[in-house]
Amino acid sequence: MTSQPIRKPARILGIDPGLRRTGWGVIEIDGNRLSFVGCGSVEPADSLPLASRLLAIHQGLSAVLADFRPEEAAVEQTFVNKDGVATLKLGQARGVAMLAPAMFGITVAEYAPNQVKKTVVGAGHADKNQILVMLKILLPKAEPKSPDAADALAVAITHAHHRGSAALKLKVVGA
Image (cartoon, rainbow, N blue to C red):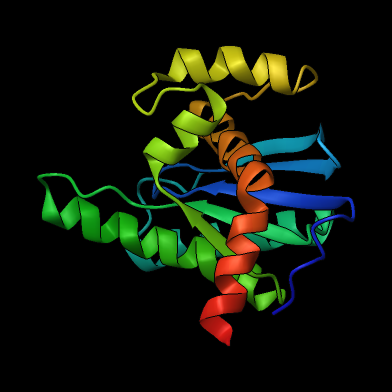
């Protein structure tokens, strides 16, 4: 897997994993300047069995990777809730979301939901509306059609801001 030098412009894919909707957002960073490239969501039918939904997520993300050709990727970490079965299923969707970029040779960074909110909004417990307001400021051309796509763009922005420390962490772990 490869990660690009920090000083070069880079295209970043952010992913907000979910079984019903997996959001994706692609941005470019050049120095401190962020540019919107695209966003959307992969939405497998609820009626599909779990394995088929996971396959649909993989196929959808693979198409995004082939179309947009990002050099870096980031995925939001799963939060654990009271429903253990739902958490496990979300973890499976997250695994697929990490696998797709890895299969394209792209290193995948992970960020906690609170870190994403704090990076984009300035507060770790921001709500979805606050994220949308900040997205409009940071990426004026972005018009996400779903909260999942907006969250994925927020993950990509978080990676853009923290990619230096993420690359250093990978280098230290790999050494």
